[in-house]
Image (tube, rainbow, N blue to C red):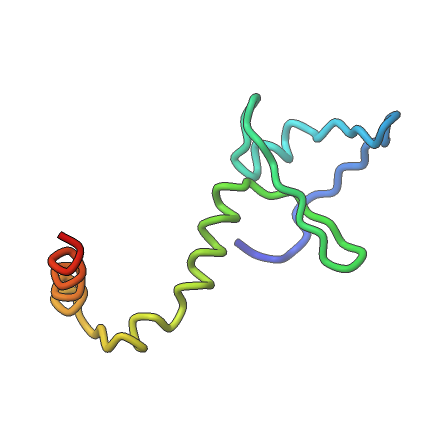
Length: 90
């Protein structure tokens, strides 16, 4: 996904800080009625994200470089490590 500005929607802040997020914005981030959203604040900028996607991005960031650190260079290497871990815990 590009960081380019694709649309701008302005909404009024109601009593207690409530806002109504426009339907096209919710659709753009894959959020449906009843779902949760995550507000990410960085400095004076805030963005709304789908929390499931946000969690997956965070997991990917945390796992970055782990394959190299563990010496995993192929799917077979990964399978061998999984089997080793499973046998150690059984």
